[in-house]
Length: 307
Image (cartoon, rainbow, N blue to C red; front, side, top):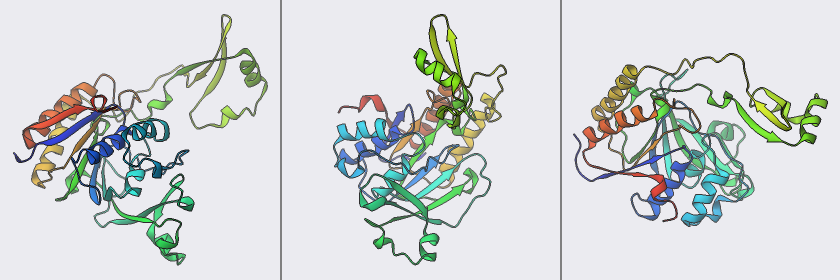
């Protein structure tokens, strides 16, 4: 057991809320400001580069603004790159169950904002910039350079000055929950327009099947309404979940990885963690972390909003 300083642990409902937790931790001096490593344990990279309506430069440590920014500008797939852009992380280790390819040597990547405005964030390989002879300092407001690793849990080594970020879907996952049926009420005019327009714009969005239906005197869009439902191949039994938790805790112990801060994402509303398993996974994981690190300060993100 690793016992010293109490480690703060925050549970979040969806993963973009980790950005708010990190900013909260900075303001309340739970962590120092820059150049940490991030150990991101998740079935998804969440490394998308967002285009923002409001500049990230306007946050200025104001947690009310950060909360609005988190929920209005970020998504569960693009919250890490903004944190890297602000200098919080200089290394990212992404651990998932099965990568197509892993790397023990770092990929050197960059993130910058278009025209230095802090709105359109752009990321890519440093090698591409070098091939074009571009100095990072010449790219608008400059490029933030970071190292990126894709690994399996058994490939972990000692990581210093690290923050641990865990999505419960790493242990059992619904492969594509966004394909679940969704009903949205619409006007009669929109219903008619959709039926009469074979090239209606909605038909080309990447969220699956779209139908317009009349039910009684009301009109609806139905997204992803299928006659047959199929099980996710990434959802596993509780026995395998427990085995994965044990293996993960063992890897942390063997490599003496003691995080400065932990975020645990449930992903139950988005549906990436099975709704009938998230609580079992969370309790198993928390028991494992407590057994390894001793006393931890556990708090839900809802308890720090508006504070």
